Image 1: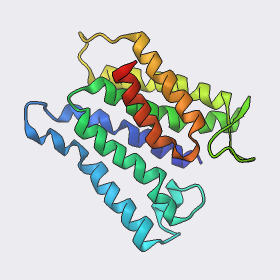
Image 2 (image 1 turned 60 degrees about the vertical axis):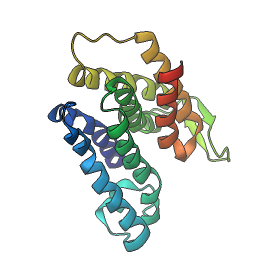
Image 3 (image 1 turned 180 degrees about the vertical axis):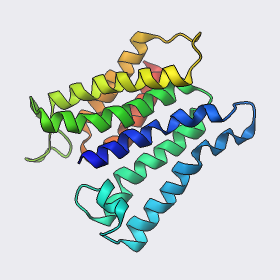
Length: 199
């Protein structure tokens, strides 16, 4: 569990390499080269090779089944590609997405697992489908930490942020993570983008 979440936080931190690319040159699109390669690799390993002893299968899946690479891990890399292409120029929304997805969703299960408090049902709302208030609080706080780290590294010091808007977006992604079960990756990213644009 811990190794998967270290990968989660590390992958979300990929945007820290954005300063290596310039907005003025078309090559900024190459910022997605690593996520794009990983997307292809995860698809091949999950759909075609299906080796349960593969290192990525052991590190990135809950059950040890290669096909699980086609869900959370692949969705994560596809979101990275999308963020790299659509949010490179509009950095704050990209930062919020990756802070929530990388830091928030990476830390929440650890907090909820090791300090469980206040269980509540999540999708698909079966008997064993539970999340915790402590995990949700961990998501909220670690998303703010991730946002602060990314903003400090990626945005101009003169640029100001609407703190209320940032907190609203993170609150929405916290609720989204809590109710969407194992499909949370894509819904966290989508809810962060929509709430940033429209709330």
